[in-house]
Structure formats: structure tokens, C-alpha cells
Image 1 (cartoon, helix red, strand yellow):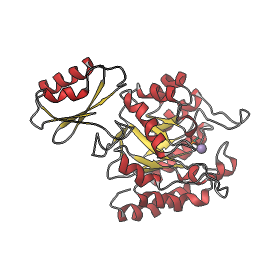
Image 2 (spheres, rainbow, N blue to C red):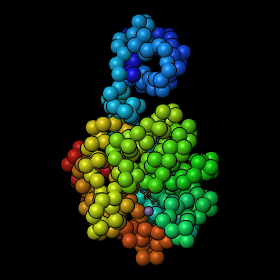
Image 3 (cartoon, helix red, strand yellow):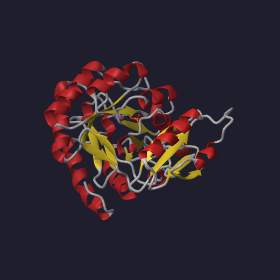
Image 4 (spheres, rainbow, N blue to C red):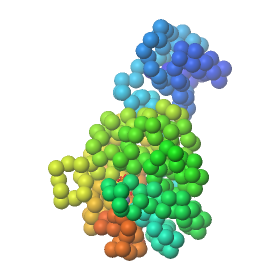
Length: 339
Ligand code: PEP
Ligand code: MN
């Protein structure tokens, strides 16, 4: 349900509604609009004797309306205006596009610093890099762990770029949060509900990637797990889905960009590196994602892709990344955005 307060509602009236919602056994989420406050009400309705409709009689309440979508807090029904998510000093979801770039894995100090400086100089706004890697094979490089996090923090110190890195396991939350500015939930953990709830209870922004077989509806329900725990700083990432096609690593579902932008107020970014799996398709698909309305990109960049410990084949050299930015600027301008 959404409780729409009158524009004239006082703080006292809002507080009274909030405590009534809690008394009825639900969780209120206040969304402060420009003109009025609305309160999203979520919770398990089973076995509750009193209906939320009763809130209608309280002072300051204009209307109580049901939320029709299964995802509640993520929906535009609750919040028609776009959300922007702050990561360090960067805002994702406003007029200016956010570009996250860096290697798939942090490998050593020289590699991460060199890449961070190069992507910063080319125009990236956030540094990416994995310290805990979800690899298909248990025998493949699993990431440097805490050492990788420290190197990312060092790269941030040198470049000023905020850092996004993947969290694989709830047990690592404290340490990953200590060194990074944004927690990435990877495709393989996109429906790991315990992990989603855990990051939902932290105050770090979350980059939630779409699972390789999750529908858009399931993707939004995954975001809802995070939002329902209180963390409203969620950015969605389309990174390609599994289809019958084998010419590319995944099928980059660009339909998802305008569909998500219609259904949710959360920012949507696109990952053409994992979306295609081949460096030569990364620039064209980056441009396409911007044209489709993405709020930003996440791109893998490596100084020596041929020697990369993971995802070298889809990584851009720094010079190619600079070319991407140069080509993306006019496309961004053409769709009313800035880069
Ligand atoms: C990554 O960003 O390196 C990664 C593992 O991505 P995904 O979870 O989308 O496969
Ligand atoms: Mn990767």
C-alpha cells in the first residue's frame, strides 16, 4: 500500500501515521517528494486482522492506494521521480552518466594503479575491480581477497576515484565495506536472498547485477529484498543473459534498459563487457546502451588484456577505453545526457 499524505500534512501527522503503520505490524518507508510525502507500506499481510485501509481516517492522509506490482519499493508507483545514488562524490542516476571502469580482477599493485590512473584520465568516474572472484572453476584464480581490497583503496587514494567491488559472501561484508564505496552483487548471487538482505541492512550503495537467467520481474524482486531492509541506494546493472546464441558470451539484453527505466525509479547501468564477452563489441554496445537510456556503464579495462588473470578477452586496453569515452560523448549529448 502507499499512504499519500496531503501536501499540507505536518510532521506530527506524518509521525502519527508511521506509528500506526508499525502498530498494524508493517514496515513504513518514507519517500519525501517535492510536493508531498508518501509512505510505502510493506510487510506480510497474512494473519493481520486490521486492514491498512483504516489509515485513511488519520489526519493529514489524502489517500491510501494499493501497489499493483509485486515489487513495491522499487516501483515507480511508490516513487515516480528518478532516484540518484551517491557513491563517494559521484551521483549515479542524474543528468551526467557514470562510467565505472577497471580490471575484472585486481592482480597486483602496478596493474591496479596503472589502470586506475588511465581510466581516470580518460574520464571514468568510478574504479571497478574484483578482489573476491566468482569463478566457474574452483582451480581458477579466485582473487586476492583482502590484499586486493587494500590495493583498491590505495588506487582510490591516488586517483580520488570511488571504488566498486564484488561481495561474494555475507561473512565478508564488514571487510569489503571497510575498503570500498559500493558493493557489487554479481550475476551469480543475484538471487542469493540472504546476501541481498545482508547488504540491505548496510548503508553502502549496492550495484546489483542481473542474474544470467533472471527475468526483469525477478531482477526487480531481488532489488526489493535490498530495499525492504532499509537500504535505498541500489543501482541495477544489465550484464547480459543466457540464450541459445553462442557467438557472444551472453546476449546483452538492451530491452531491459528502457523496460527497467519505465518500471523502476532506480538507476540502471549497463555492462557491455560481460554482456558481449568480446572487446571488439564493447564500444558499439556501450554507445547503444547510452542511446537506450542507461544511466551509466561498467567496463572492464586492463593494461595487458592478453595477460589478464580473468576476462582478458573482453577487456579494453586503456587507449580503447579513451576511444570509447570520446565516441560516447556525442551519443550522450544526442539523448540529452552528459558524459
Ligand atoms: C564481474 O563484474 O567481473 C563479474 C563477475 O560480473 P558478473 O557477475 O556480471 O558475471
Ligand atoms: Mn569480469
